[in-house]
Length: 332
Ligand SMILES: NC(=O)c1ccc[n+]([C@@H]2O[C@H](COP(=O)([O-])OP(=O)(O)OC[C@H]3O[C@@H](n4cnc5c(N)ncnc54)[C@H](OP(=O)(O)O)[C@@H]3O)[C@@H](O)[C@H]2O)c1
Image (cartoon, rainbow, N blue to C red; front, side, top):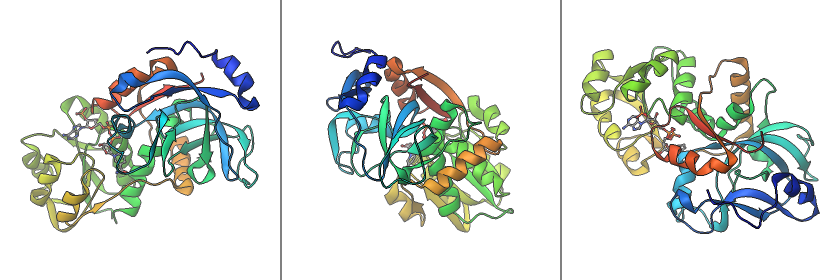
């Protein structure tokens, strides 16, 4: 990654930050592939009345982050440049706005820092976070695992708890079970007592078994393989893949079965299902953090990247074949 020659060191930047200076970030000045990302000094995060300034320890990556960079969300969100990508953060509260009561400087927090526009994301030394997006980080949770939790964990939580009504005698099929969202969704669905079948390539089957999932490969034999495990079909489908995975649903879902997904709103509606777009929820994020801290929710970080190696982290998440989560360590 090209380093901006105008930048000072991270320590110098931090020392001058409160004086109306700048913070070090990974930023893009235009849409493009992952190589448009560079180390840059960007303006200090703003401390709004109901925001906190967080010193970033780790930022979690999600497929949305490379899609934002390509311009794929341009029609859905106002996007401004320079653009600092990423929505997930784990870090330490540096300052709190005058209306904030729940946090104070020094607190360890996690956040799904999604706002109504996209510009100042979490791949920065310091980030401004609305309190509605933030939750306490349990001390037992390491920084990388904490940063891996917000976006994917909330998506899984909202799919399982808001999108479906599961019962212990249900069988759930999760398409895309071994990725960021899938790894959490299979565990949350399983903790409702339901039986969980999950699709992934064979190399991820042992991993899925460790999460209590009965794995099936995706591809031509998907319908046969699922019906071999659940001859009467499944009671619910969580779709994280779209395309052929959704095409298989009519052959697999029992009459009256439930379907919820995050990729193809139109097709989900045609199938009688529900499309979900994850939203920040501090109470749900607090719950997820506690589950992870107690060991009731496993957080699998398959790759950690250094701040200066963020492009490699983007290449990994763009591959579409990440097991669990990818994290960038911003301040080790
Ligand atoms: N609407 C929303 O609010 C929302 C929220 C979160 C995510 N999303 C979207 O949901 C999708 C999944 O997100 P994610 O974070 O879980 O992605 P991810 O971490 O990149 O997921 C990668 C996983 O998908 C598996 N996979 C790839 N192709 C597959 C196929 N044809 N069938 C089954 N599994 C397949 C891979 O398994 P193998 O390596 O074994 O192939 C890998 O484990 C992305 O498109 C993302 O943008 C939407």
